[in-house]
Image (tube, rainbow, N blue to C red; front, side, top):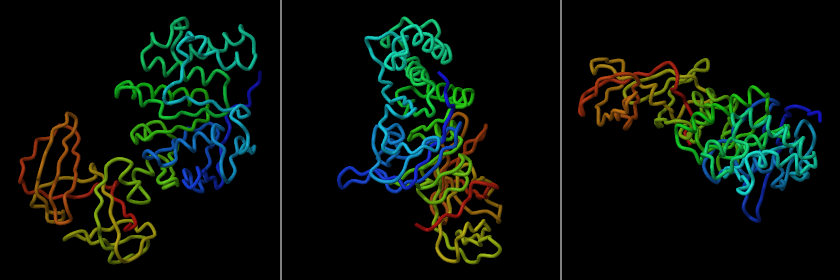
Length: 355
């Protein structure tokens, strides 16, 4: 059985409606072959519906869906070369690990021996050699997750889909399994669409991230681009922490804006904004705390300082409101009421539209 290899995925003005409810609203994007792209957003934003439309488990109300350049909009799930790893893993409890992994090729009539060989190869790939005779109830959550991945990989699909694959795992295991998924995707050159609401997970595994809000795409781009240059307040606040401050742009010259920030005037890339109201998104680690005597900074007073092992969480009261600051590394605790001055790091301070 020769396989075509990884495939691109393209949505062209795709909408999904359930009666009067629009779950996905006029969405267009492309996933390059061999890339891992994450659909990220809060519950109810349309990300899982989008994934299910790639799988063929939902048929789009409008628009076109292409896989490897072929229009699959009206094709059923069985007629698409796509596999999905579900949030619940959906393993058959009465089947062994090997039987679960061999299920796809068996259903397709490939013969018991061929199906077993394909399943054994994929189980070895995900580190489950020697577990073939066990049942799902005898496995840990992480091992069950790997069985689900092996079962999805066994037919070498053109596109592999993950729906919140780590949500049932504890925090330390989540980190390890997401690294395994990323390594597998890169080693096998898989096209992967990955759904999560966890921004750290998305930043860690993705080539690109599509941030969804209210059934639409809020912004898409590389992880660093979304973190350092959010398009709006929703993206700034959803991906990581951000201090959002209302400001006024007083002048724009050669693509740079002079911004009135309390008693300070700061210069930032204008990002297409003009004179008038705007907002600044400031990442907590981009605020630097210095001595109160620093006249070039924004004066403030420590309201709270919490020790979290590898960093301090600090709340500082200023003329523009209360600001959240993170200091990494071994730092002295700052007493409540201490006067300080805040300055800005070279990145993580971004102008965004006022609303």
